[in-house]
Image (cartoon, rainbow, N blue to C red; front, side, top):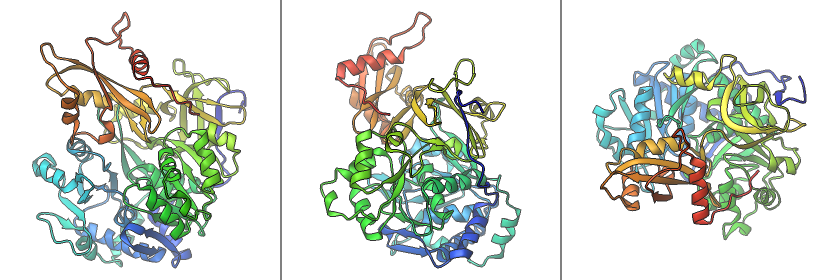
Length: 554
């Protein structure tokens, strides 16, 4: 390996796990069945490893009773709770493919996602804050969701039945933890089988279903936990959502592969419950995107809580401001917090800092290559590996790369080349010691508070407005969320359209974080001589008009 080029190979001294998630989990239970596996504070539930095994087996049996067979897709549309992790383990044991549906999705998005992968069953929250999930499903109706045969709602104790829907508690009660079919099916499963589909915003305007295997996410969870030096003594507070890889892999699977305890402070993020939970449960680890850590640090009651049990965790999702990292280390005792970088398509982590990475490197880079993974930085035009220190496209290869986008061979081939390199679309540099720094994005991906948003998807949606002739969406710097969306709209001749009309059109149809904060009506877009729209000129004009300066982030 030439240390002067931006190419690096992960360590291979620890072998990859070649078991399925179910088999690996059962082995962990055999070793330490009495240890606490899961604490769900908002539900008041606790499970030992053995209890988690019994309940997930009971659920697996119940799902088989519904007539589901290996390879079938089952959706989960929920914030964090015990049913989520039970479903994660149960589906893996009987060869079902768990499909993560973002709780911020609205009718058009959930319809697309469920139909794209042909979900036969869906487990859903009833409602959350202003979101009425069951109402949205009723609005869509059976005609619009032809493959969906079973809808299960996550009920709370004492809640009565709902017409045409199965209560989760009733479903669970119908299963048998000793069902012999679970072990029989388990013997037929391979580590390379698909186990999970996660939707990632598509530049084509529609989300793509990244299809991940047991081998993909089990190993990634394991090596992430290794980076954090997790042991069975660790208790990890997980306020990040499970529908993202962050919660499901960096959280749940990092814990389950190390015999550690999963702790959910709440269903959705709330800084106060995070602080209360860390203290009450003596958590040793805490995950979050920078905006979450900022909300915790800046909470008026922050100083009341004893966070001295904390040691490690992961900050990821968007670049970490240096000052925030310093405060997290000093005021939250997270001296061994790590930074991770990845993408859904790579299970997700390719690079991570370790517990002993110098602070300067932790805030200015995303760490070094993970075990059993190859990374390189190439010239986007020629594909040649660039010298160290020079920016180019970050590419990654190894066990972590997805099987592909569900039923989309063309998009899969665009992302993964003939030599199995996943092209991330991110611009990065690699220093002499192999530390990687993400410096920007080749395309116009916007990251708002850890959520990836492709402007094209918003543009495609806004084109449907009867008064909109043309639209361009860009990201603008924002102190709170890192970036906010801005839409430039050309209205149809003879039509006038207002900001409120555009926002009302978005309401209930697309996720709240995809609704542009800034809307401007213009007669034309800045173009090149050949007619290509110059998004950077839109961005610059808006930054000048609004007095926004780029936040200097690593």
